[in-house]
Each structure stands twice: as C-alpha cells, then as structure tokens.
Length: 258
Image 1 (cartoon, rainbow, N blue to C red):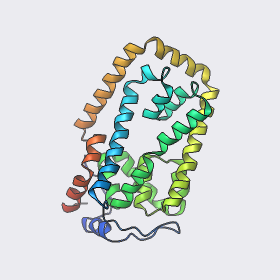
Image 2 (tube, rainbow, N blue to C red; image 1 turned 90 degrees about the horizontal axis):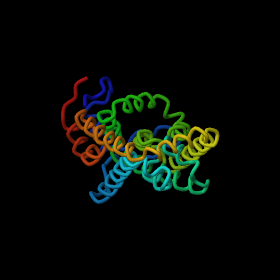
Image 3 (spheres, rainbow, N blue to C red; image 1 turned 90 degrees about the vertical axis):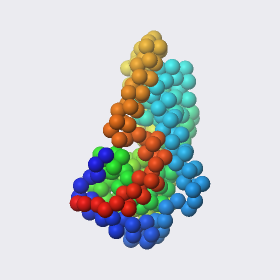
C-alpha cells in the first residue's frame, strides 16, 4: 500500500526514534526508550493475542445469525462492535452486558498501546501503510494530542488511537483511566440507545432468527470475500500483525522520498 505523502518523518529520524527517548509531550508524557519489544516472547504474546482477537471478530461476523439470539453473550465476547452490542443488549441483563462488553472492548487496547511504546513513530507509519485513513487521522490528531490526550483517548478508545497514545509517550495511568472512562461511556450510550429502540431491534432479531441459515451462508461469504479483497489490496489484519517487525524494519532500512 502506498505511503501517505508529506509525513515529514525521514528515515534517519525514524531510526533515531527507535533508539532514543522521545521528547516528552505534555505533563503526562513518560520517557520511553523506543527499542522494540523486550524479547521475542513478549512480542509473540502481544501479536498472537491480537491475532486471536481478529479471528474472534471474524467468527462473530460470520456466525452472527446463529449467535445473536441463542448465544448473545458469546456473540459480543467474539465481536463487540457497536452494531453487535446494540443487537444483543435487549437479550442480556445489565451485569452481563457491561462486564463482558467492557472486557472485550478493553482487552486489545493496552496491547496496541504497548506496540506504540515499543515502536514509537514507526508504529504510526506502519498504521499509515496498512490503514491509510487511520494513518492520516493520527497525523492530524498529533496537532492537538499534546493538549487533549486524555479527552481524545476517552472519546475514541479504538485500536489506532491506543497505538498513537503509546507512541506519544502517554503514561500508563492516564491511558488506562481515559480508556476505562471512554469504554464505560460507550457501553452506556449503546445500552441507552438499545433500550430506546428495542422495538425495531427486537423485530430485526426475529427476522435474523427466521432466516438464520440463509443469512449464515451470506455472512460467511461476505467475511471470505472481504478477506480476499483486503489481501488483494495489500491489507490483511492477521498477516499485517504477524509481519509487523519485518515491515517496520524494511521501511526503516529503505530510503524514503518525499
């Protein structure tokens, strides 16, 4: 995938970023050495766990029609997208919804934060190559992240933002506090929305239950087609994570042109 032009980060700067402590950004920043993972085992544990989450999300999407009404808790444990949380909310008691939804939403975030701390700016450049829309967003956020890091993480505690927070030198305590508040707020809003629109959502669940087998075939086909299209476009969540080190090393070693 072509790199985003005009990043203003040269090869030498990126190499220095991997070996030198970053300039602190704001009062909350910590001095972090960008030396990569502390060990191959640590790297494999983090990457392997994130790959497991990608696989779980794909399974949740593929088997939506047979899980949402019969196994709603398993459904959101596999894939806690807003759509899935809204669909399953009416079938779950508050404790189940909030606890499982919270754990599933929060689980990948510290891992992406850790990747940001390990690889620094190279992690953001990697995100630009693999998800250009997110990469451009992160570069734009850099302008205000120094002054609004906590509100930004709380408002959008998603994977790219968590990776950027780690790369920026944000402290663990600030990151976790903002992430927890943002995740709980997200669940509360989805639960409130689902309560307000339980009628239409209930009808949608009935439709899914009535046509679960045809919908199962369609959803599996869509997941497969989406995966094939991503690979042809040079994007594949599992492969991208598995080869992150090699990709960063290749782009760090090769000369860049503006």
